[in-house]
Amino acid sequence: ILIVLAFIISLYVSYKIAKPITKITKSARKMATGNYDIHFEGGGYAEAQLLADTLNYAGKEISKVDTLQRDLIANVSHDLRTPLTMLKAYAEMIRDLSGDNPQKRQQHLNIIIEETDRLALLVNDMLDLSKLESGRQKLNPSEFGIRGKLSEIIDRYKGVSGKMDYHIHFNPDEERIVCCDVVKIE
Image (cartoon, rainbow, N blue to C red; front, top):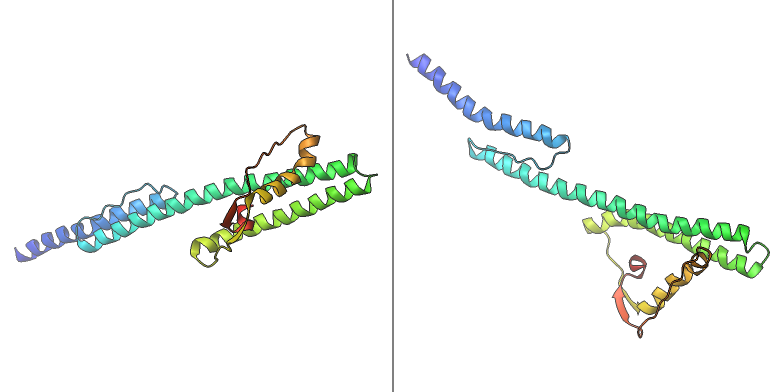
């Protein structure tokens, strides 16, 4: 009778211990497929509940990172498209319009060089983003006039906007001094 009773008790205890681990394992498999909205249930004993709580927290954090990654890809795609369009437009203008005018050609080539530099900065910014998030890179804030910076950016688009029949109107207020990382704000 004692052996049978011991066997039944051991089956019950092993079931109570194994059931939460089995649930956690099934939920972890679902999470591994990309479903981060899984809720882990511990139950049974304290260690299983602690494991479930830890995995729930990890799932939330992974979900946030996944969202940030999607947003980053969308933003980078958008930010890279603009200088690429500018490079193409100015190259076409050199080919079609300013080839015989050395002054115009030089102006258009300078814009192509500036936009190429800007593309390089954007690519570096993608690399810097992970460093900023991890705290390994700091911003370099400086004080400068925002009106002047905006005018400089708008000037880059004058040739393209004129060719594409766009008109950019910029009526600035008085100069405002801002304190930020000039490369990042640009």
